[in-house]
Length: 168
Picture 1 (cartoon, rainbow, N blue to C red):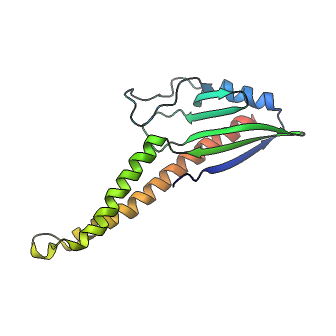
Picture 2: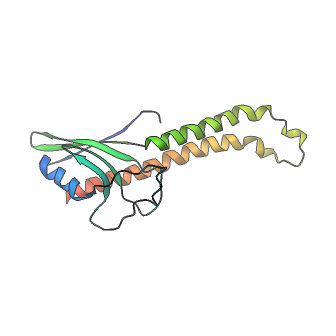
Picture 3: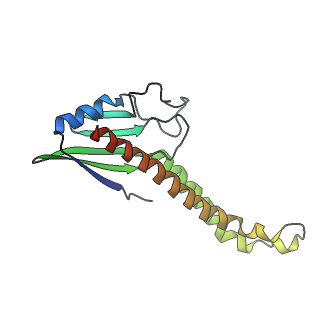
């Protein structure tokens, strides 16, 4: 994943001020929690707010309010710009920095296991099934797929909500 950002541009005929007012109206001004927060999570308590975070000037940094725990929920940040008779909302998404650190450490450990496992002599232990040799490789592939799928699902839901808010 690295520093690669997912970029989405939403265009609307609404004015810049209307767009910012819609975003402010649907945003709870609480600090974005991290993966290691001691609080139990920000649950959706009212139906009129879809995001929490901050909107300052024509920029925002938001996270979707969810009823469940998901560390892979993307942080949306972006800028609202007026271009003639239309307004562009440039939305970038990324994982929380603490989640990136955790995922990097987890994948590093799995990669080390992938490198080290061929040197273990599991054949000496007749009770250990053959597939044990491939567990780190399964972890590497399944971890990458799971991270990618969960992140993209959450990102697409957040972008869809943004589009629906601007169409109303």
